[in-house]
Image 1 (cartoon, rainbow, N blue to C red):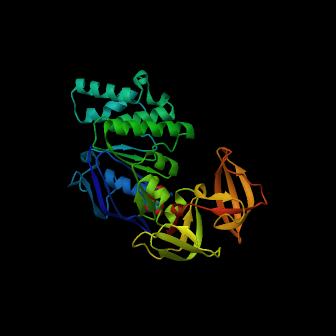
Image 2 (cartoon, rainbow, N blue to C red):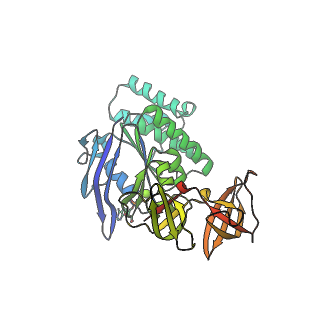
Image 3 (cartoon, rainbow, N blue to C red):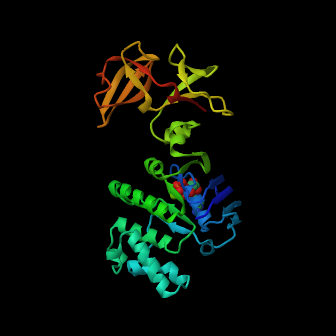
Length: 352
Ligand SMILES: Nc1ncnc2c1ncn2[C@@H]1O[C@H](COP(=O)(O)OP(=O)(O)O)[C@@H](O)[C@H]1O
Ligand SMILES: [Mg+2]
């Protein structure tokens, strides 16, 4: 396992920018996900690290040595794509053995390593099958085994589960994560699926228009996004327009455009530009009896989602969302009711 450093990676295409100053550090053995909408520069960044795309500028280091000038082969990194890119005329065993054969390992060593990987991805029984006879999940496990069999220090994956249905995708997420941990390989993973990123990553870099908008642990990004793009990309959020933040000692309040009394919130992050919004996740909004909270609202709509009830509430024509557990511990007011809205101070934070 190795640490990876990327500094100021840039790639322009005619009329558009692929990557615009991408920088990050990944400690040895950690799992970083590049998360962002389609066209945000995830694949461009990953392909430059893999060596399939030449950067205009920037530094790519694995364990402090710059690999930017090396051919993909010389970089020795494991790569898995959404399209499995397996050799269709070869068996499972031959596909996995291929990287070892081109590296001219001894047959006994090849046997040993392929057997170990077959066991890790649970495909021993399929080793002599042609890969064309496998299911999507099995093909992706062969692709993973092939990418890992030569013990690369870093594994790069570009939307590897994009072609699978949801249930299989969730199962494969867990398998990839277990494999990455047990082999202790440093991983860079690309996806546009926020749940996948939240569940698999040690750290997530959210990409927008070729730039990293914010990077941090899944918890930090979900609980403390520092800008509107990240807040909205990672799940539902209420963004209240604010006119001012007041601080008095350790207590902070925000003046919402929609309510008279200031509401409690977190302090603005040091050095952030003038906050324009107060962000509150629907999961953190509490609904109570009228006049008992920060302000009152009318229930416009409610939708039963199993574990939670999703509410749409109206305050002075501002629509806010609340998710209330359906466990019987919280009241579930009907459409048309007047309710109060509140939240714990630490669940509301200023955003730029
Ligand atoms: N080979 C290329 N030629 C021209 N434009 C490209 C090429 N590859 C990517 N782009 C453009 O660069 C931007 C980023 O693309 P990409 O890295 O593939 O995004 P993502 O993987 O996040 O969906 C997009 O606007 C895309 O159209
Ligand atoms: Mg892509």
